[in-house]
Amino acid sequence: MIFCILNFKIMNLFYAPGLHENSGTYVFEKDESRHIVKVLRKNIGDSLFLTNGKGGWFSATITDNDPKKTRVKIIDFEQKESEKPVIHVAVAPTKSNERMEWFLEKATEVGIHRITPIITEHSERRKINRARYEKIVISAMKQSLKAYKPVVEDLTKFKDFVSKDFGSAQKFIAYCQSDIPLKKALKPADEVVIITGPEGGFSPAEIALAESRGFVPVSLSPHRLRTETAALMAVATVHLCFPEK
Image 1 (cartoon, helix red, strand yellow):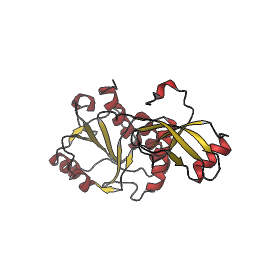
Image 2 (image 1 turned 180 degrees about the horizontal axis):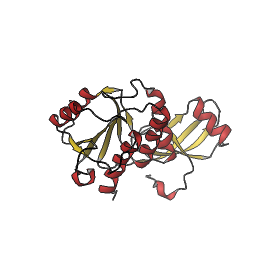
Image 3 (image 1 turned 45 degrees about the horizontal axis):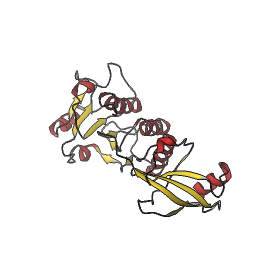
Image 4 (image 1 turned 45 degrees about the vertical axis):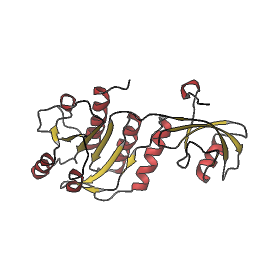
């Protein structure tokens, strides 16, 4: 029996990456088990909602409320469709970890599919804690009740990123000197790729390289934006131009 998630008042959503359509049971790891039993005070027979981060929504009941390995029985499953277009943002990590983490959280809440941290000529940070990034997007995914977890890629050099094959995706690079607003450049597409730079901006050589690889320079705002603000503006603009039906 397929369940409609909108019929339930969901207070908490749990991440269960190992779940699939034919799963009958699931055992949570220690941290999630403790949160379920000790913090939320869930008991045997209580209902929970889970996602595998790949579009799968599951309803389940607790069969063992062990605070170290809570076990649930899967009752219903629904596969949710991914939002279109797919939004892929490449962003130069900020010097302040807090500002980059803010972007990861808010972009996940608004709706993003893939995030690639990049190294540019003017990058303020050249090392990242990818495991930390993963924890932030998972937390934001659960808080905002989303079926899909954004993919966080490895730190990538700018030249390597622009040289990738993105198929039929629309490709843009945020450039403050461009007189083409992103909202006017966007056209219907299955995927949109947008590169946003560091506080110091992209070098002329980087803009030239991106253009030679098919990236269109666009403006995100008539005002100067911080790195994390620009990246979030890019995500929000795509959603505004292609609202969910």
